[in-house]
Length: 271
Image (cartoon, rainbow, N blue to C red; front, side, top):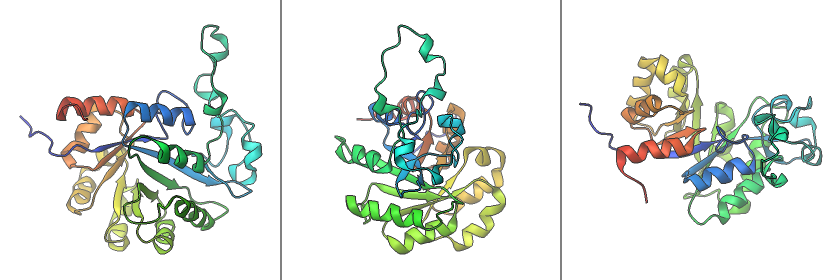
């Protein structure tokens, strides 16, 4: 019989409770909070008029049925779009469906999400990914740190950590806010030998679950590094068990409620 896992990882909602509700909408994040997620993950991009918004893709085709680019549109223009309809395109045909709150369906600014977290009745951590490449380059990190300062979250003990696949982007954050936790995302095994020599001593590793499943030697190397590991995107029981075997500190999931329920069966219900 395998040994019982010794550490219960934090469950971080990937773009909110995005399996059930449209990603990066306020509705998806509120559902994740209600489910008990210990953290929320979001991607941020900069609009043409300088606002950080929670959007994954550089284009709006998939999530807002629009041909525009986030970087070339103003926040006011984005605010006119529906970012939730794509998730349930047949909703208009359901006469018995409750009316949606439009504020839960539109573009979500990072400031609004951080305000929601700050006002919540328990500590909730934030994992914020800056997307690159982008036409704004380092301005994204500069604006992000400025916003964290507004909340007093640019110091040690902050509930925020910043993630990126871009080593350079994380270096920028380290220069601007040296006490903020950093997560180096990794999705290709051949990038790890180089990254392991250059990333900061206290940086967290953020490998993808697919890479961990398919490349056991890289998985073992990451585990031997002695660094905290946060894994994305963990949606299946077998993948959660792999993470528990590795002793990871956080699992980032589209299905936070499922992950919490599975962890309850292994560790007992959390308070």
